[in-house]
View (tube, rainbow over the protein chains, first blue to last red):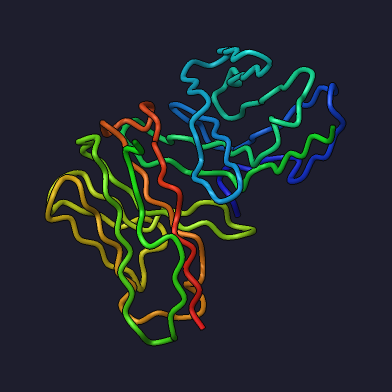
Length: 111
Length: 114
């Protein structure tokens, strides 16, 4: 059983559509991160959220940390083919602990 | 200009042979990590290091050992490779103990054990 459950596992959409990816857990996290991974490469950090209810924006990407710090979401507005990739959430259970990763959401944006 | 490099990028080896993967960083980061990535399991921590000669186990450490004799190098050894160790291996670095700082990953090593 994964500590962090991501949904959906796979998502295929058309360019211009909006989408939301979810990362859920029954555990509380002191911080949570989102990474994007492209084929043949390692994950690249997009954002870190640390405060319950926190919202961060990165251009067309909006990240939210749940009030109880057990879940997070990533919303992409007007998706583009360049957004295609594997999106991973990762959480720090307690301060100083190692990151635990979800399985990821494979996003494909078709032109 | 990559701050972290992994070698080799691809390797095919036979069951029962020892294999060593290398991670080299130029960022002078204290923390280094080895993960494996498999379908259905995501990224799982094998071992990590919090300084020269200071290492600790992760969640899937059986069959693996590590060494760190210099700040810049972190080696992962499969003592006797098995088919279940076929995977993509990633090294990561971070400047501090708090995961809050984020990890920088290498490009990975694809290992096939036949």
